[in-house]
Image (cartoon, rainbow, N blue to C red; front, side, top):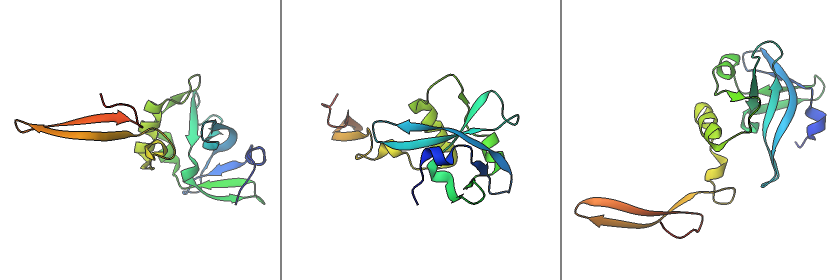
Length: 141
């Protein structure tokens, strides 16, 4: 079911182990693909000094009656997740670490959604394999 972001702001985020992670504070929106990439959780005094990002991949249920969101994550997983400084934007390097940590598919690896690396040629010379790689239709390097 679709929900407006402003409706979810302030909702409590619950972990699978029954712990409260925090409250939805804001959203990181991908303006290139018109989608929400992360919910930003305000964890109160629990994880101060860092932003806690929750991917929509983790969302299991939204309960409007109780105004909460159930995330398919444990509190321990979130505590040990890659840290993002609160004063910096989300970089691709952070996303690689974040998506790898949780085992989520990397949305930018889909040719419809983002940049990918294409192998344009393979050469074998003296037993060594070389590849010509390019990024989304760019000429081979």
